[in-house]
Length: 181
Image (cartoon, rainbow, N blue to C red):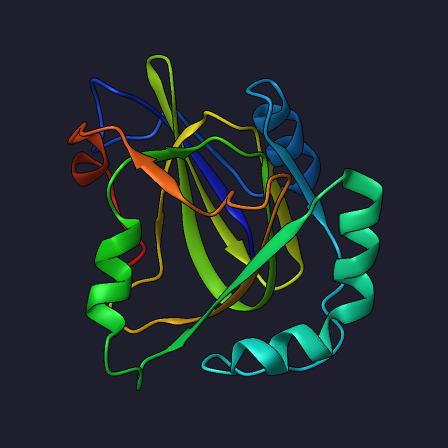
């Protein structure tokens, strides 16, 4: 089940709002320019599948998304608990950063925690298989795959080098709950 928690930056231990209904999550995130929707992830893939396996399994829906939304590049996050560098991969996503490109994340297996810092609020979205989240360029964000990850996410961008992040140097991400909390 997808869950949106909204926190004021002054109270990272207690969310102001917790939402579990798709319509409520989507409308709350839309106020911040983030689009949340569902897209069936029908072809089974396992966390830890190779980039090539994921791309082959989701070629048609990914091509359709890219054509409809003007997206030009992709990357795959596919990690399971056996990955030898899971801790390093996780650490690479945990600091607040932003992308100069619009980003779409399509969760095709497992789960991950997407967090956004907008003004005085932090929005954390537990995303699972079938969730599609579109993040506007410039949005301060971080992502948690957990200590024992099991996730496959297809990431799509509207620029060729969109996956390159710019770190904000802020320490706010470490103040909020992570996927394992």
